[in-house]
Length: 189
Image 1 (cartoon, rainbow, N blue to C red):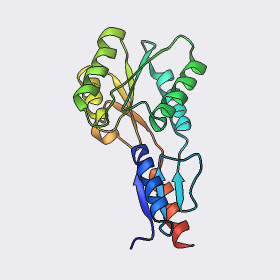
Image 2: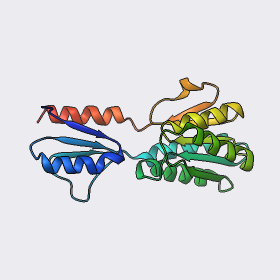
Image 3: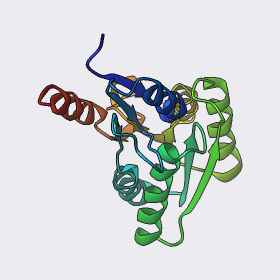
Image 4: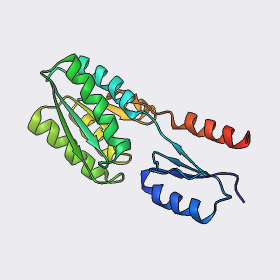
């Protein structure tokens, strides 16, 4: 028996909710998910992605030379779109002339789709920085950024090591900190 069962990601929200109903003595946590009525045995672990997106937007707004910046998201879900909300807010506050292009791949694994979306933003709109929030989709977008010698912004973890001359920063949620605190709270009763 586990002291705590953790669901990772918005897509497991319903499954964790159902499991919590079936096993009321078991403790659960869900990363990036919550409920209208939170069960006594479930701890949502949520983050303010808008703040991280805002910081990334400040960097992008002050580095763009074309005033065209792209955002490639995995799926149109809160844990992704919140990055875009903060990103756009910072950019508009810094320079109203900058155009933010955004598109979702409807996947967190399709690197080819990420590459195609980024390539379209670069070729058709002259984007010179692309912020990615799409899991494996990011890899394809970064590949396009590398090939076209433009900059990228990563997400969730420091990503510069994947493309040191391309990825200028990353928008971090510090999921590890949220997990450590939840585990500590569980162990402390």
